[in-house]
Image (cartoon, rainbow, N blue to C red):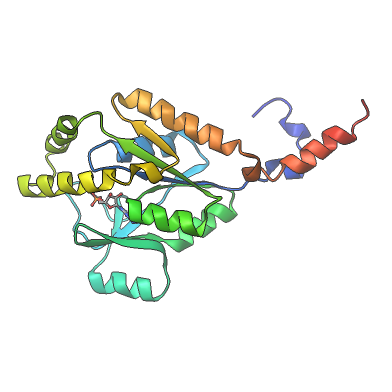
Length: 220
Ligand code: 5GP
């Protein structure tokens, strides 16, 4: 809020929400980075996906995911409830459509923690609204160490997640931005810079043309 806000014209509050898609191999810090951005910016909402995989220790229904059986998930696909969905490591994951529509209508931004297949599908549907960011780990041993430190998964699951992570990384160059998460605070600052810069694109601010017209109409 600035001291000038009470002079704001109605159209000055109009904004078009953006969709921030974040992908990375598991363990590169994407979840912590996304959750911090959502905590720090009131206009940013985190999308909660549906999945057929079982909850990990500490995960809660509706917070990390909506946990579904395969039959329930397939019924949601048939009903057209997903904006995108994909099979990752033998499990189905999908982005529920309704919360995204509600957020965009309310002028809010939304953040998505989705794999490259989901990011590709979303960007194809809404190219002007999506900003794609890929988070890379600083090194392979660092990624393995982070997955082991979580102590959430068995060794076999960790090895599968690392192998999947390598496949995910091969899609890095399709993204608009790449952040190497060597230092969390630095990577977070990079994410904030991307968010702020993307918010200033003319197309995301429908209030700009009338605002500029107002400036031009003023007597010099
Ligand atoms: P995890 O099981 O470790 O939580 O997630 C495995 C992978 O699925 C991650 O790469 C994550 O980004 C991806 N993922 C999570 N939710 C979705 C979703 O709604 N759609 C797609 N396409 N991928 C998702």
